[in-house]
Length: 246
Image (cartoon, rainbow, N blue to C red; front, side, top):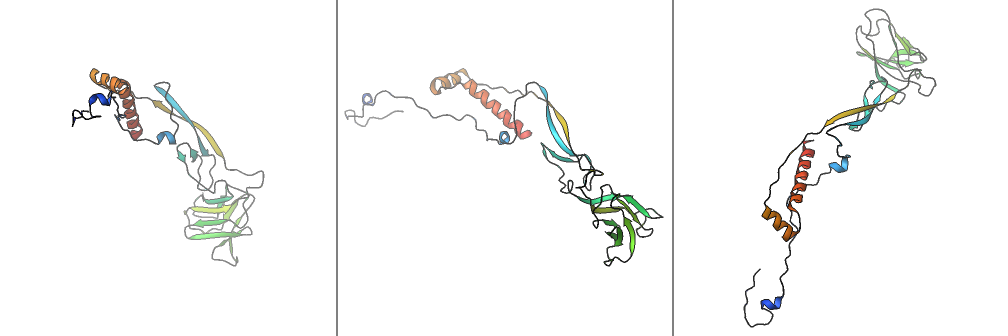
C-alpha cells in the first residue's frame, strides 16, 4: 500500500506518524469440494488390507405360503425385500393347486391347516366356488342348494365333482387357516443367512506440482505448508470422485 502525501508538513500524514506497517491476509481457499452426505448415511471405515470382505445378514422366508416363496428376501442392509403382509397371518392368498384332470373328480390338499370353516374360495377359469359347512357351492348359489364338492377342514382335502371345473385349467384357492392351534401342520419361517461381498481396493495415483518459491511464500507470508495443503486437496478430490462413481 502506498499513500500519497497531500501536504508534506501536515500533522498526521507523514510516514513516520503512521508507525510500522503490519502484514495481514485473509484465509485462502485453494480448492472447494461439495459436502457429501454419504458419510452420514452409511458407515465408512478404511480397509486394513488391499482385499477384504463385507459380511452381512440377510433375512429370508423359509416357507412357501400364498404369494411368498421360500427364499424371498424380507430384509437386508441394502433395502427392504418383498413385503407380504399375509405371510405371518392366518390368511392364505392364491395358493396355486394342480390343474383340473380331463376326467374324474378334482382332488387337492391345502398346504395350511386346519382350515377355518367358511373361508375357502376356489377359482378356476370362470368358475368360483365357496364353502359352506364343509361343502362347496357355486358363488352364485346364495341359498346353498346344490353342493358340487367338499372341504375337509382338518386335513385340508378338497374334492370337486367331475365336470364342475374346466379340464386342464389351473386352480387357485384363497382361504384362512387356524394359526392358533398347536401343533400345526406348518408354520411360517424366517431364516437368517450370513453372506459376504469380496472387496478389492484399486490403487489411484495423482501427482502434485508446485515451485519452491510458491512454497516459501505460502510458509512465510501465510503460515501454511503448501505441500500438506496440496496432498489434502488431492485426497479430497479422489474421495469425492470415488463416491460419485460408487
